[in-house]
Length: 326
Image (cartoon, rainbow, N blue to C red; front, side, top):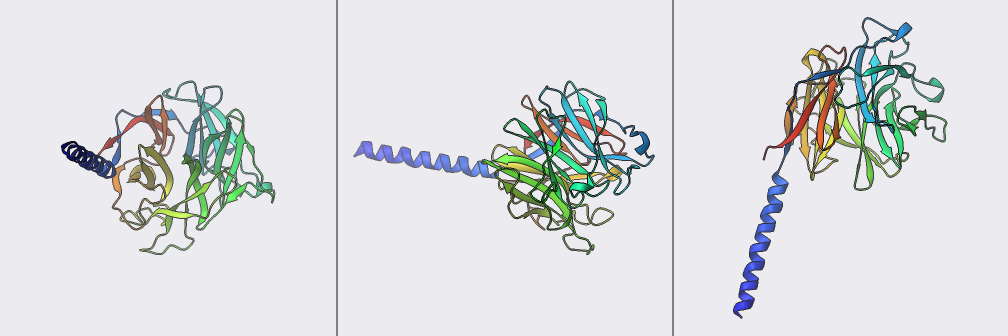
């Protein structure tokens, strides 16, 4: 009998300790913190005949190619290429931490024959699947897909209608796609905005769709929008742009962009649910950084953040870590 009582007491204590540990784990939140100075990675490129004094490198992607080199492709806007004035320019480096990466020139322009708007390329992001590199990017009205075997030269993937579109909507100008793999599925975060600006309403939002194969996608879920930072930008459609999600243990940190330029502002939310960072709700807000359009790279166990320069004339990098705040 005494032995039974001791066992029951030990089991009770174990359950209490596990419960406390689980409870504490649920309460843990993470906040991104810069831990180094910035260094310049890329400047404002020479685009030849497309060069414009007003051009600006904006949304971009960073990844490691098959040969080990690091690739950076940025959307350059306000160029002289016509249409919506946007195209992709590339840079390359031997090491992730190198300053002043080597310019590669114009690496991609919109193809109107496959449904993309002239000058409408936006925000490339690359993910690997079965040793193939897949690039999700904006074609102005839709999210498009291209693939590569070496991570350097990409060819467009066409659907059964002969276009590069994999999905669009529900808001207009679907853009800024960023994809991660979770639980055997691909989660693609992207943004869009309403055509008519309405004060006090959600005019820009971040959505997520899931897929098993990067070709067929679920219906969208709005994962972030509104809140106290809504309508902080100057045109009403940009307070929820450039989503980037970083898994940390059992949590997910969403970087949401609010402002570009000298007033640049990016806010971060931490959630246990990759499909819910709060809509008109800032209870999961954990921080803000004076940066724009960040991309986070994990390499050799360390995190690096790439972001636009404040004057929108190039791209910079720094080291970052995620600190517990609860």
